Length: 117
Image (cartoon, rainbow, N blue to C red):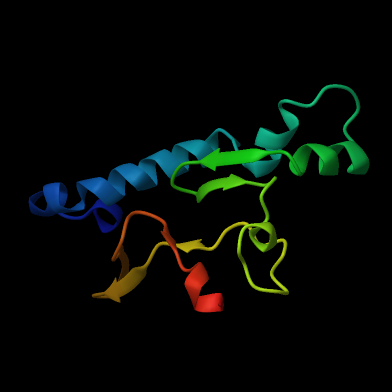
């Protein structure tokens, strides 16, 4: 387990990203993913038409997995460039490889949408 969380003397330095990882892992283990968030509020049959209707109004919140997304506001309607109309997630978290291990450079989602403009 130390490969993931580091040595005891590194605990405080790595606390923020370890807690973010733990939250993301918990969400995954609960199967609380985008599809589940969309369908849990649906009434009646779930099929292609009802799912797409619900998805077009959905707000996704999966901390640590993806940034908050409002699927009723595609980027093309809120200032995104032509050709990227249905893009909703323009955020990244940066990592690097250090001593053969992937370690985070950042722990919060950063919007990189300006790179596409």
